[in-house]
Length: 462
Image (cartoon, rainbow, N blue to C red; front, side):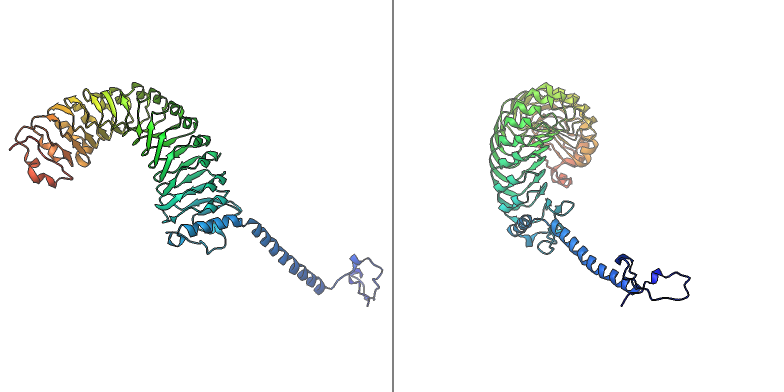
């Protein structure tokens, strides 16, 4: 039948004629209301599934590649994932980006970061770890039972910025591949079992800000090429078996804040050029075999907070110029061959908390000016040649009297011990020829009631 053309009938018509609309173009055919509604519903029924399919396709496109997913599964299995302190989501959630310790990029298409310090990981790092080629940060610090060699596939991680495995048990040599990572800014391999030499190739990582190879079993000399990593702020090579002299090229690292070379077998004299490292706050050169005098140029290191030169073969008078380092909080000069007297100008170091000069050949009397060091907690003057009496002022330094320790043992101090000195929290007055009588508070075992007291009277009677 011919459809009615209801929309073509004038509104004021009194009769509704039967019209033949067959000659009209199709676009003018009117449709009943229920037909229009049905068409709209049909259209929606087609569009909604298409939209769902589109979203599903978009999600599928954003999934982390299977190679990266498999690498994470391998890491879980090879490091006893069931025993981790935190393994939430691992192997349970289909999206690896929701696994604890994992961070992905904005569209969840790649793994950018693995952060699982102190997570009770135990085992080895799988070779497939190198398939996580979009990684920027790795932090597996404090997992003591991670061991074995770092896989050679780490060379694939060219986007890496931070790699930290401090206090694990990794062994083998330090991979030269770290030097081929153009974005690497922090490399922390301290407190492991790495052996071999420090590779000069590490200097190719020219964006390094922090390099920590401390507390390993590295030997050989310090590569002069490390002096080319000019952005370095922290360089830690301490607690190894390194030998030779300090390369002068290290004095080019003018951004250094921390330089730790202690507990090695380094020799030679202290370079005067260290004075160019004017941003240094921490300088540890202790427990080596350095000889000669302390260069006066070190007085230019005005930002120093910690200076540790103990247990070397340094000689000459105790350096008076160190009193100009007004920010010093720790000054360690013990176990060397220093002579002369204890400079009274050290009393100007108002921020000093620890001063140690024991086991040297320093003599003279004890300067009362040290009593102005109100923040001093530890003063160790033992095993020298100090003479005269023990100034009571040294026993009245507030922080040391309440919490610290005064050591003047094994000297030539005479006279009586000020009774006030026996009220300090901790002290060691052994093996000095004190004059009798000893204050009652310091006599025999009664002194043991004091905090951590070590008191044996050499040469004392009564």
